[in-house]
Structures are given as C-alpha cells and as structure tokens.
Amino acid sequence: MRGQMVTEYKVRKFPEHFLWGASSSAFQIEGAAAEDGKGRTVADVNAAKRAHLQADTRVASDFYHRFQEDIELFARLGLKAYRFSLSWARIIPDGDGPVNEAGLEFYDQVIDRLKYHGIEPLVTLYHFDLPYRLVEQYNGWESRECVHAFERYARICFARYGNRVKYWQVHNEQNLMIRVDERMNIRAEDPWEADRQRAQMDYHMFLAHALAVRACRELAPGAFVGPAISSTCTYPATPDPRDVWAARSNDRFKTEYALEMYTAGRYPGYYLRYLQERNIMPETRSGDGALLAGARIDYLGVNYYRTLCASYLPADPSHPAGQRQFRGNEVDFDQFGYFRDERNPFLEASEYGAQIDPMGLRLVLNEYYRKYRLPMIITENGLGAADVLSADGQVHDPGRIAYLKSHINACADAIADGVELFGYCPWSVMDLLSSHQGFKKRYGLIYVNRDDLELRDLRRIPKDSFYWYQNVIRNNGL
Image 1 (spheres, rainbow, N blue to C red):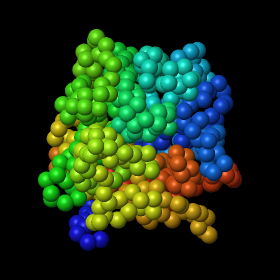
Image 2: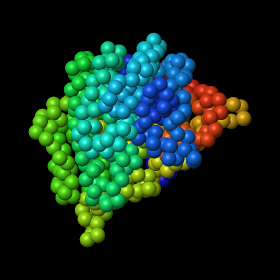
Image 3: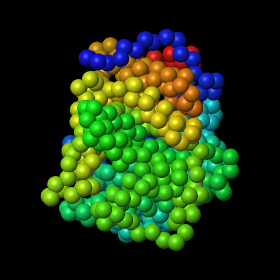
Image 4: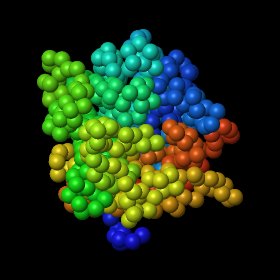
C-alpha cells in the first residue's frame, strides 16, 4: 500500500521467561451455559436473541466438557501462559446469592491442569458476562449494589485460587464494554439518558475494580493485578491542527480517561469537563476518592487490534459539544465538538474491515510505558477470518501468520525501545463464539469443527498458525 513502511524481519529473541500465551473468555469458549448450576448471563441472553442466525452460548467451543484434552493441546503448542476468564454466574448463579461449588470445582480442575503442564494461568474476573439476575434486580452496573456483589465474587475467587494464580485481571476492556449498549443493558432511546446511565455504570465499574484490587492485596499477597484495556491509537486525518486535536481527543475519550482512573484514581480534567458539560456527572460517595486512589495496579494488559484515524467534528445547535453518535458496530462513536472517525487510506484491512497496523502496536506500547511506567503484557491481538477446512483436512491461514509475525515483530521493536513487555497472548487460542459473527469470524490457532447452526463433531484441528506459533515459542522469538 502507498506510504507503508517496509518492515525487514530478522532474528528477534525475546527476554528470558517471556510469557508466550494465548487467550479466551468464558462465555465464548465454555458452553454448558445452563449446566451444573450455572446462572444466566447478559451474554447468554443476547446470544439467544440471535440463535436462529448464529451459534449461541449453549455449546460454544465446548471447553467445559473438553478442557482436559484442550489443555493437552495447549501444552503441545508450548504455551507458557493461558489467559482465560471465570464466569461469575457459574460461581454465583444469581450474582450475589449462594455459591455454586460445582462452578468453583470446575475452575479448580482447569487451573490445576494448567499448572500440571507448566502453563501459567492468567485469570480475568469479568469478561462481558454479567449475571442476568443483577440486571433484573438493579439494572446491573447502574446500581452500587452490583459493586458490592462484584467485591464479594472477587473475594471468593482470590480466596479459592489465589495460592495458584499469580496474574489477575479484574475487568476485560471496561473502556470498550461501556460503549456497547446490549452488554450494559442500556435501553434508553434518549441520547442524554443513555450517556447518563453509561457514566454511572462506568464509575461503578471503576469502584468495583478498586475494591477487587484491594481484596487481591489482602487475600492473594504476592499476586499481580491489573486491568485489560482496549487500546486506541488515532492518527489525524490531515495536518490541520483541528484534526490533530481530534485524534488526541479520540484516544483520550476512548481509552486514556480509563487509564488515568486505573493509575491515578481520578478522572482527568478533560473528562470531568465532558461530564459536567453534558450534565451526566455520576453520583459519588464519601470515601470513593481514597478507595480509587489507593488501588494502584501492578501491570497493564493491552488488547490491540487496529488503529483509528480522526477528523474534527464541529458541534451545532442540534448536536451540542460532547454528544455522541455511535456507529453501526456499537463500538466506535463520533463526538460532536471533538472528533469523527475516518478511514486510513494508507492501511490494508481484514475481510471484516479492521485496519491492520503493526506500527500502531509499537506506538501504543511506547506511549503507555512513557506515561504510566508499568510492565505490560499483550492480552489480545489477532486476526478474525472466515477460515475453512481444506480438501486435505487442514486449515491454511497464511494471513493470520503474517498478521501475528508483524505484530510480534512490533513487540520486539517496543522492547528494544525500552518498553517493559513481559508477555504476548494472541486472541484466540481456538475458534470461539464471536459476539456478532458467531463462528463465521474465527480467530483461533486451533480450528473447532462446527459452524453456526451445525455442531458437527467439534473436533480440534491445529491450523498452520498453530505450528508457526509453536516454533516461535520454541525459539523464544521470530
């Protein structure tokens, strides 16, 4: 493509004890959505609405019933770490009631099996799957009751698994999740009311994060805890200073405000101004500030897929400054008086439209390390594609290999720049349920033999990328 930097690959060795891993999440991989006492989640309810079109959470990749053979395959791949999430509703079915011992025992077995194979478990407490009973009772995160319920859940997990789990993540992509109305159960048609609910829910999730960090210090001393952030790197559409400001604002409002809360315990000034001008300042209580400020994290989990491009979007009488206009994917939004997302003509895109930019990963890692001086691990990075079984019974995915190679090379560049990066976990270890594309859009290193409406035999077939990544791990680098 015109203007792209040509990357020359050479032998790149990574630091000793670098955590080569892979990632998944409970609702996308486990299945068994209503088995052994598990309660319903927001993810279950939303997936069921699309079950006539695509796979839902009832079976997913069936990890719940196949975890032993799957972990054997992870060991064959050579993983040093496996990042996965616990299902809150599998452990506490209604979110804040009786504990389900069968759920706790399932994760006991998963963690013990990983440890047996020398694979470090990297455990996420919450990955998009709020127990649905909390929505019915309190509208979920809009109520402080949900915060208290989450603290109890976190304490149960730290007490049960803290002696075996070294790395914890509290929320996965809070800064992205908060934008997706169906994940947050935001039903308001009025844009102002939707933004008000969003601001309150976001604040409560920050409180829950802080309480979980505090509980981790108490119940799992010696463990490392932090968030997984949906990273953003935005280029200005032109050198016009207004577009440069738009690009900076895009990063700030989509990611950096959350990083400020995680690392400093307070909203930055530009975000306070936005909340005040929109009249959506969340309700707070005495003691919140000290709690947030005291919950310092140990590291950052960085989820990276793409970069963005932005131009200035002026406000007008119908669209006051700060009002947001969401795109069709429910993730991206424009903000009047600040920015509008644009397509970058210098980048290629995946078949699903995500622009591919390994240089952006190097930029993100350098920028976050410069600002926050925290160790980092890549917790998600991957290519979604419509993979198919070939006539030879194999899955050939050269595009994914090229994607991973270029991004791992960017990680090596960032380490050479002085960034403290201690691991890389691509998304995903195997094909799993994509929220809006089911099993059409596959990210896995391992193919799962099913499609959206036919389970087939659920056989696991290592893709070409599996063997390529296996060699990367074996060589500790490219």
